Figure 1 (cartoon, rainbow, N blue to C red):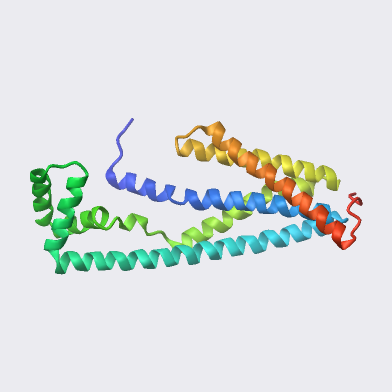
Figure 2 (cartoon, rainbow, N blue to C red):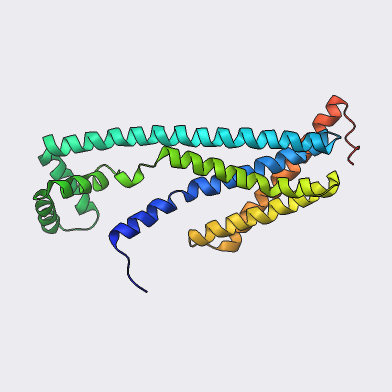
Length: 244
């Protein structure tokens, strides 16, 4: 297998950083829509009302998730950028303090005092290298931690929509409300197991355990949503047994 360069490896890590938005967006889209379908199917007698409400919920959820991801990532990026600027300023104006801090940190990581001193001395001959190393070793931050808020927002919104379609499409295609609900729950369980399995594969963890965890969450959300819908229908006096 051909080796990859440091730049290619960095770009790969940056791409993988969006896995958080993909997994979270899809999981939330699947669970939210499945819960809405189960809840509304238990509270409303007409399946078209259920479908329209679920579509509205999907649109609102996608916009909300995208906006939330954008604002959250933007705030995080601004805070991290401010910390990076302060760190770079200290490297320029107080290099001896930074060198001493870096020396201590390298010692805590296992280097002897003499070796750590030589490393710091070599880094000090290249200000950019000293700055980058100090950002990561002393301050625990780096440019790789700063995400793009626009990309995160788009990824989150699209992932939510894709996840929402998993239970919604089977429910729409099946003419019977009860059968459509069963198909939506099955699709939800299978999809979340697949998402969990995929996450386990990426994280090099036990894939079946990760998939089973997602499956348990899906079934719990479906049961809770349907029970809540039944309760709302009973409290409001709607005929919840009129499923067509």
